[in-house]
Length: 425
Figure (cartoon, helix red, strand yellow):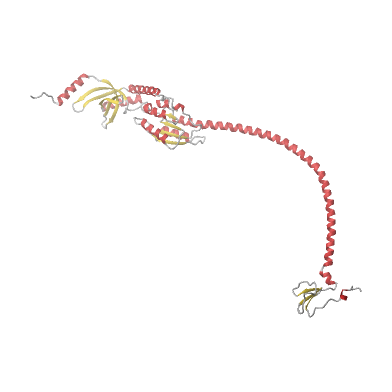
């Protein structure tokens, strides 16, 4: 039996008629942009999706034709200060289309920027409630910054104006304070920013350097550009960081979940630089105050000690003068006694010297020879004390006052007794 059938095109044409007939007018659709591709011809192709429980439950293609793109893009920018991008939740007015070849799609002709801003705020509140339930909102507040924070780890984009302003203001300070500042590069906007910043945090904590503080710098931007700082995973990563985290993400009107969980937040990178400078300025002023107090105390002590020294000097001078006066009389008596004793010793010495001189004069060989006596010497010139020991043939010398005679011994004779008689006899 031949089966009844319809062709695929008939089926899809029927579906097109049914779908487009069921949605004859444009309608507002809430969805998240999961893909966006702007073509050179001006058309913009999007992938819209809806998630629940972490899984995608619906997905459809959408198109913004070039004839509407400029209007939609400019109006969206004027309200949100940002362009349409992946990850944004939007409320779009669209016509439902079904094409037999390309399937179901939406033709978008308008997007409500106020909804996108409100959706971000709702998501932000949900993140805050979750962090509060998990006890993460106050973890960073328990950490204490060192008295003089010197080593600072900065998370920022290398070309960000906020990073440049911070570095210049901190390192070129008028006080000459020096800091060790290390930049850890990360994306600071878009879907990839939370994971990039978390990776930088992990690198700081796991690195060999123990930093005193972590600084997350951006320096402002549109609400949608900064929406990544309301991300739960980023806020939780900041809260659990064991190092105090400081944030300077936006301008006056910006206050994000990352700011809430951080140890401290300020509005601008320049203000954050001032915060760390103030730590050193305050300590410098405190030390200067101590220096001033010590100088005053030291000067007072010197003045007091100087007065005491003056009194002691006067007492010592008086005592010395008195002792000198007393000792002066004793010294005069001693000098007199020394002078008298010295004179007596000198007289004795002179008498002894006279006796010695006379003795020397009397015993001088020249005086003996002058009286006619002869001094005998042996052949070696040694004085002879007697004739014993001399033999025939020995050479002897006879020393007279006017010269010497060299003689040879012919014979040794005994002494004559009459030779020693007194010359007066």
